[in-house]
Image (tube, rainbow, N blue to C red; front, top):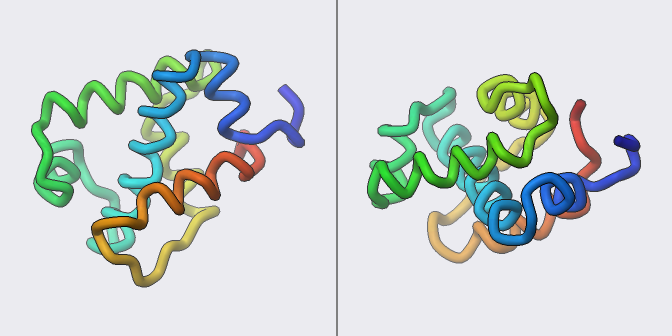
Length: 110
């Protein structure tokens, strides 16, 4: 994997379009939730923040795990990414697509 390869490209290559889309959406939503809470959030807290079922949140997290390189945990990846991305003030609705678009162009933090 090249450092010049975007996060979206890596996820697409490793998991296909559907999983990559779910994974990138989860990442964007997770970063926003963490910034709003000013700390790392658990899956149940994430679900409550976004008002979605826990099952949906766990499916998104599984899609992320499928797209990550071998040996990298979801938690390690999310914390490394959170350190790179600082989303300050966001509205809960309408921002996810914008943040996901930014992730497609971001270099992989590995």
